[in-house]
Length: 132
Image (cartoon, rainbow, N blue to C red; front, top):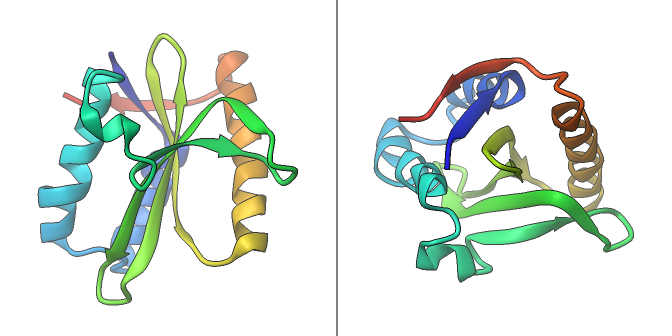
């Protein structure tokens, strides 16, 4: 499966890198290799691990169509929970990374994610590259 980096994903990555949410080693040794697993989706055992991969849900608990979350725990010096929203169509679209803070913030992120997915469906997104 092709993995597309959207402008939303690139911007969130740059913000997190600048804020030092994760270390260079964590990115190279854990985060990037996990994201590259999307090229094998769904044929990797990590995609059945709900601590790593889950269907995204909206504020009412309903599944978000085509929406998923990659999850990492205890990341960086702040030991935060890192999330990456991914839209799965005929290709995987990296949408936005964020630090899970609380329930209210998570619900706002999922509302934004729904908008991103709609923009992808309408071909109204900026592609900043593909993972290789």
